[in-house]
Image 1: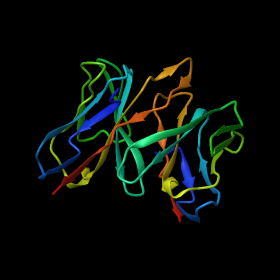
Image 2: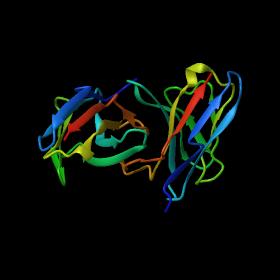
Image 3: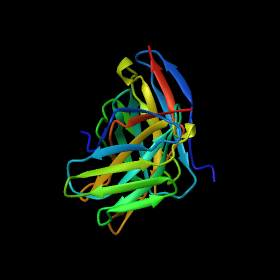
Image 4: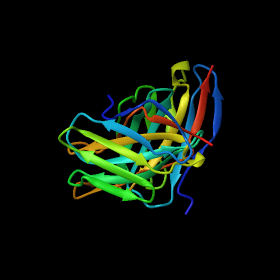
Length: 111
Length: 116
């Protein structure tokens, strides 16, 4: 069963624009993580936000977390063609040992 | 550090054949896991291990076996391959959890398996 669900499923933007992806989850969490997957490659960890944090930044990435709505968003500012990838959120609840990944958002950044 | 390595990168099997997907990590991580990725399904956990000698089932364990005799290695065995096991398989490792804090996972490059 999937804990996290990203939306939209696919997103196309022009280079330089901002991209926003959302993740909703079902149960209480310890933290939420975002990963990127380039085509044909493994996932790469981007950023982790703990359940007691509301916002976190890393370079051009901004992640927010709203535990009351059980949702998170990932904002990529000033996007580049190299940001073209699939983005996944992953959660691990307070009672489990394992990560659960959503189906991902496919981002295409057009030059 | 090589990180997480997986072999082979590609494999074609006939229905009923068995094989082992290899996974190794050199980061001394306690937690290791296997996922399969199918189009539109995200990643689904097959089996995981929280340390040498300890393994457990994930969401989709049927048709797969694992063992963890060392901290470094976590092979995945397909007992009798079926077309439904055609997928991309990823191995991942993590320091695990500490005081309730969950660490990030490090992924291998994947094995693309086709069962005909």
